Image (cartoon, rainbow, N blue to C red; front, side, top):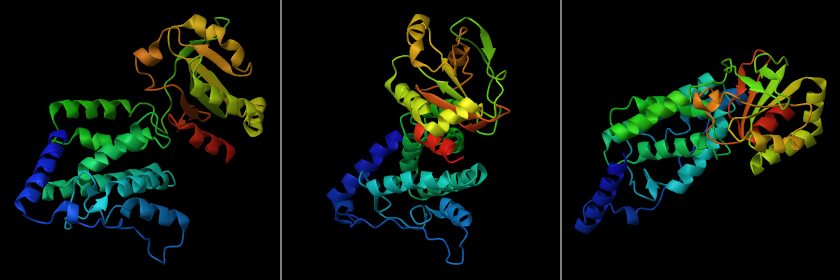
Length: 317
């Protein structure tokens, strides 16, 4: 796809220099073709599901062929498409994973149809980049590995990729399938500051917050401050409704011990003595901090959740 981007740009330059076809720079950008649920559809959940599935129908109509270049995506400004994508991720979070997966697969099929009908279309590669940026990047505030996995698993099977890109997407599809939402989280053992051994599954609580953190990590400290300072959350912890399991997965154990006064005494604060969490990929920890919310049976409720989404979930219950 990367090589094809260069080809598309060269073709665009060639078309302008020869005077053939509609010049992209003379084309007036179109407004984004918004999706509007039928008026008779009044249930909010039904409307969200409809929006998720049909949000991109106008932009990904393979029978419509508007200019595509570094600024335009099928005639719509790329910046507008990107903002709409960010908005769409919020819609996906409103519906079930099954419905979201159906919407993502539908978008994949329609975007690919655009490329197959017109080799100069950049619709498919634009969505490939947006899925990675918004749903996979560990710094994205709307990241969602479950939703990204649906898309990247399809990419991994796409025969139009270079071997290098195919290998990358196969890796991402495999790693983002670890500890999916709804699955029982992988068990592991950890040591506390006294050297006592515990296991994740041995901790009994209605909900468990699994918190992968590092000493001195500023983002981790922000999360710690919220968990210590938000009265509704501290009440959950003190009542036993929520247990925090705060785990260090690297090798500087002395540095971790020096940081111990920062951690609340009513948390499980420990380290991975065998380094299996990272080395054996028990969890796909791409960046610190990383947060998982588990239910009583240690099934994943939220996977590597952005902190704003985690706190919103906890405080809405």
